Length: 312
Image 1 (cartoon, rainbow, N blue to C red):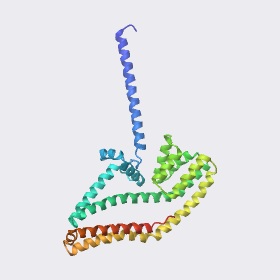
Image 2 (tube, helix red, strand yellow):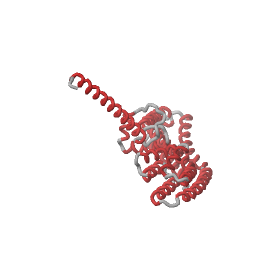
Image 3 (cartoon, rainbow, N blue to C red):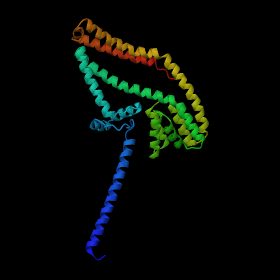
Image 4 (spheres, rainbow, N blue to C red):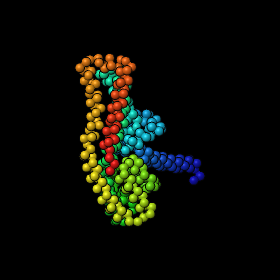
């Protein structure tokens, strides 16, 4: 122990060992933190494909804005494997393409109108995907309620019942319940986790189920009988919604057919009399008439869609 060389070598080896151990612990912690952030920070769809994300800079800037956060929430409800940056980039490219096509096929005045049509179509696509996923989730609610009732009757806690339902059910219910289970695993309260679920996929049926689960978790009581009664009610509402949707399918098709007929008439006129649209939009009165016509088509589409929506 009195040899300075041996003492120096021993201290050096000990420092190297501690350094390597510290670096390994740091790397493991960083990897776990990165995995947790990737799983919880994206309220959008889980990135299970492992593909390389594009437009990361645009995505980061969008997430700092209110519009970006709202867009991220809408994308998360659709189940699409997209980031806000990727969606905005794709929408910008589609708007530019429609702008150029409108100017080339119709007239320069129709370029901006076609660009606005591209924005409306992109946002409408998100809304359609979201509604489609909500409908599919609603159809799974009776089965979800049945699984929760059986699990709680077997003695499992509500948190464990939700985790078991997430493993057994298919998408979208399985994916959404997996998010709820992950939030519960990191300390989020059951009320907040289920509240975010109801916010992502808003529907009367889900609100009733969430309210039943929250009240049962707070006050206790006969949660099994409540869930079984709710299962029967959800089954009846499922059949009623299917009948109503079948009866109103023709009205829904009419809402989409009206603007298509209008745009088709413009193309037909320009084909029969080349240059007619240029002459029509060459004056202020013609441009005003075109804008009013497009506005009336939009109002007609919205009114017909409103008539076809019946709250069940």
